[in-house]
Amino acid sequence: MPEINPAVLVWARESAGLTVAKAAKSLALGGSKSSPEEALLQYEQGRKEVSRALLAKMASTYRRPLLVFYLPKPPAAAEKGEDFRTVPEEIRLESKGSLDALVRDIFVRKELIRDVLKDIEEAQPKAYVRSLSLEFSVPDAAIKLASIIDFNLLAFRKCAKPEDAFSYLRKRVENIGIFVLLIGNLGSHHTNIPVEAFRGFALADEIAPIIVINDQDAPAARSFTLLHEVAHILLGATGLSGSRAETKIERYCNDIASIILMPIGEIEAFDWPIHDEEMLIRAISGRARGINVSGSMVAYRLYSAGIIGLDSWTSVSEKLRKLWLMQKAAQKEDRGDGSGPSYYVVKRHKVGGAIIDLVNRTMREGVLTATKASKVLGVKPANVYNLVGI
Image: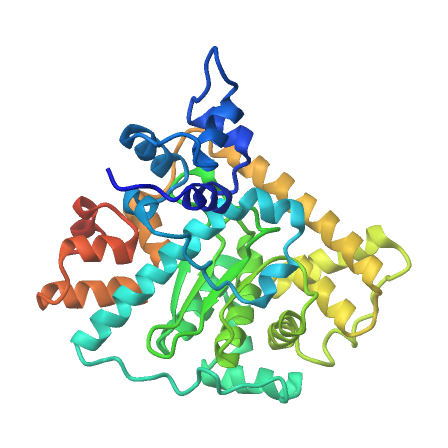
């Protein structure tokens, strides 16, 4: 068996977000002569050769292809963009493995989509990618973005519920060639990624721009995140966005998205009870429900407009988040009978109409195989035909 570089073993474990203790326990290492941690360190320090069977277990535990372990040295980390640094340290470490796996998966899908678009001669560069810069004022940038996607605020607000409003916005975004997916885990609820670590991800590719929205987030919050990520693409800034707004680009994208959904002048025209937090939360929640956005977005507009301070915004946002989690738990109990839409209905919604349509067309034309289609869609090959309606 080819020699394994111990540095690759260390990289694979650390990039999966696992400590030596957690990895050793998962791998069931150790025995009467050494502790689990010591047993793993023997391999990672090159003091003991790794067997093929153990490599296979590592590949499964660390969510890596087996061939990765035969690399001569650890590969470079995937680019996530500067805004990844805004994720709280403890959450970033806890979610690092899942986030890295998700980013890798999206990069693979993007390359496959690029290849398909080239094969069918639809790989024209998108002029709007990198058409925006930080030199644009926020109001001008908001006007530009809304014009590019042909967004109508009145139509958005007329939708019956936030889910419908998001679907309207998503269609506008997909119409200009951006693929929008809803993904919040690696395929099971055991790998759910908290929104505090990941709300949205934008790949600012000129041929196949992709946005991923964390579907663990509240439906009312997804429209704001989608507009935020479109702003990333217009800036040409690939990035993984958390829940804070500490970097210049993050704050800029937040401001653009928020004034598209709640224009300048509208927030200032209302008499907000800013000196009574309980009443303020009620007023924010009521206004948010009426315009198909999240209470956190309305609170952010109050903050960005200078009506409330940072501490107030943080406190109100946290309480609004807790209220939503309570409502979500209650709704889950109400659906305890297991009723709901079918697997294929849910999966189509998460993958998005743009990708479903592309896969359907190219499979019918014989350009895309079921195996490659399954990778683009994120499903098993056997589910492809039912999913895309072939």
